[in-house]
Length: 246
Image 1: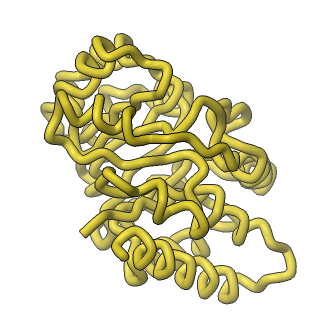
Image 2: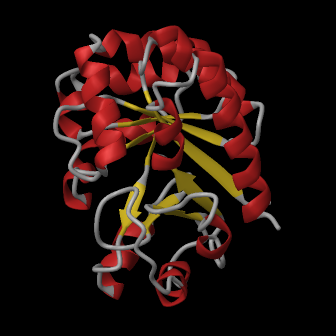
């Protein structure tokens, strides 16, 4: 069974909605949830997620909201925190990582923290049994891929192309996948540009997909009520789960 990871912007449009949505996604095919931490300059994300980030900040998102949401969600849905390094650094990682463990959060995804710089926190992550998700990109050499994936935990985030999330770029992923799996038994999940139209193709040879912009697009629809947004996101999750396993 191939896995579905869903990204949602934490606290958008409000804290209680994020909790309700997260739990609904967990009941409708999502295996792992990324709680995205709103940030003013989300460099790896496309316009949809960037807009949701900015709107969440305008609505008053605070880091404590992430903690409260995680307390309600993480014991019930496999949960990761996705954010840019400054968001974590400001909270002091020597305190934040043990707190994540206490809240039942399983790992961090930090797209702007290079592999070499993650090594400074390796012992802290390992001691608390928190995964720091590894990224590999098409621009990485075989030697670098081997270095990055050797100690990869939980899953490897395979960037499907060079660019930002939500783009419609299509690339032949098979040679890239083969090069990764040559060096690791850790599951490989494909991210960037995955939606209900592309999921079946992108998951070939991989162990799962990571979907963000397709969910956030629903969250940004002002004509939908909160309940309608949850219903549409849940339906999308079911479709994606079926597509990647058909």
